[in-house]
Length: 362
Image 1 (tube, rainbow, N blue to C red):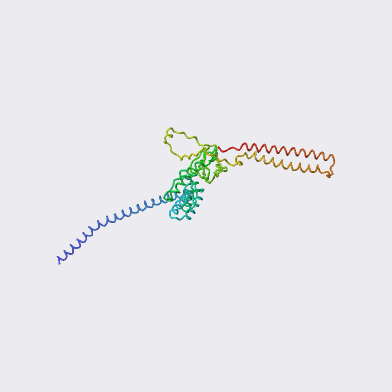
Image 2 (cartoon, rainbow, N blue to C red):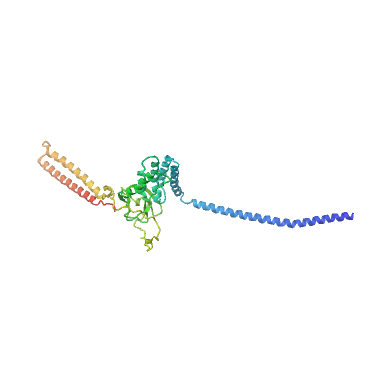
């Protein structure tokens, strides 16, 4: 019995010692789990903050002018699509893409490069060439915009077509030239033609050109023009600004002459010995004197008509007028005739003066 009691007591003591030895191991395990849970919560909060920050950044980025990004990307997307369609011989689809790209150009709120503008016409020439049509008109227009337009041998592998394209460069350089009509006073606005920053006295070759103005607030407005009619550059901006607030003249550094400066691309030079295309005569005439001349001519014509009517009455022997009335009619008729002649002379003088003020664009 004693042995049994001793064995049972030893077993109980051994169980107690075993439980006591296991408890210390369980407490650090619970602590570690709490620490791990805390760390996971912290990592989750950090991730949440990062995600929140990235979300806020994306929201801020989305606050940028979405319309501008969409319009610019639309132009670029249509041009890329047009090239892909040309390469896959989907020429009708390429024509549609180029038309969409040209429509998007006038809405783009940035200054396009010369290559971007001329590429529209170059691709049209490529489509015409691949369709066995005459591509010269389109390629000529591309070179008028950008004389440095390069030949893409991946699109057209016809050597004869390439020779014709290169020959067009010489033809374009012999075309008549036109003034870009850059105003002498333009304030803080910047005027671009075919992607190049322009200055008063600049000329371009005759043809269609892409005119853009960057207004003082940074907004850009564009249109196509031939410069054969008056271009009202300043009115292209949707608001008024002080055109006399001119930018300060740039100080030319002595290193600039060695190519040490950078900035806007220099506008290409044109052959100034070529014949100049002037604006239409009506556009160059002084409008006030011209309209005064027209008004005087109308008055002179009306007075002359009255004088003729009075003269017919005077010569009518059966008019029943007395001698006194005939003398009065004669006097009035002479006065009217003299007035008509005076207004006629005034009309001619004003017209000649308006002609003398018609100046060729400088």
